[in-house]
Amino acid sequence: MARISWFGEEGDALFFERYLHRMEPWQQAIADGRVTAEEIKAQAERVIALLRDEPQLPDALHEQVTRLLLELAVLNAMQVTLFLQNQP
Image (cartoon, rainbow, N blue to C red; front, side, top):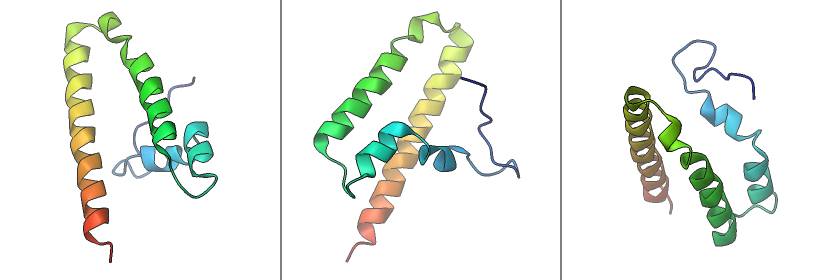
């Protein structure tokens, strides 16, 4: 995979949101308009498989990626909470 910039053209917006819509697992999961527990489990397994490469990372990079993943987890939880709070 070619290197993908983490930022939008302006350099201030995360690129991931736009990239998400191109990801095959996402397209398959929402094709029927809903996400199932099985689809979430399959995605979790893909993430775990990628995380298993952790021992290959140098310590400094490992620390930085760990902080990034933790902050992304907080961001995702905040977004889901906000969405749920705004449901009728």
